[in-house]
Amino acid sequence: MNVIPIFASAGITGFESPASDYRQLPLSLDELLVEHPSATFIGRASGESMQGVGIFDGDILIVDRHVTARDGDVIVANFNGEFVCKLLDVSRRLLLSANDTYASVQITKHDTFSIEGVVVRSIRCHRESPLLCSR
Image 1: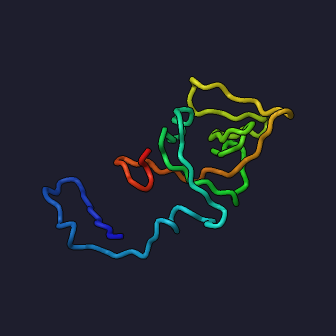
Image 2 (image 1 turned 90 degrees about the vertical axis):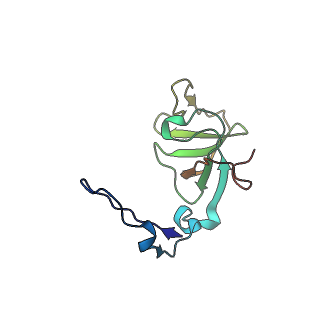
C-alpha cells in the first residue's frame, strides 16, 4: 500500500508534491480487518434497520465468532431460523434495530436463538466490485 501524506496549514498557498514522500507500508487488509481468521466470516447487510450505527443495505460485515457478545454489540444471530443483524440488549433480552422505524424484538424461551458472532467491522463499497459488492 502506498501512502501519500498531505500536510496543510493555514496561510500556505500551495502543497508539496504528494509523490515526494511515498512510503511502502507492510500492511495487509486481512491483518487490519480480521483478528481471528479461523473464527471469522463475512456477510452482507440487507435492509435499513441498522443505519443508525452506520450499517447500510449491501454493506459487507466482518463477523467474529471468537469475540464474546456484550450488551450493546452489533451481532449476527439466528433468530427462529432467520439470520438477523441487530444490537444486543442483554438485560432486557431484546434485539434492537438502529432505526426508529423498526420495533425491537423480544427473545423469549419459545424462540430459537443463537448468536453467530459479533460484527467487528463493516465495509461500504462506493463502486461495484465483481467480488464484493455485485448483486
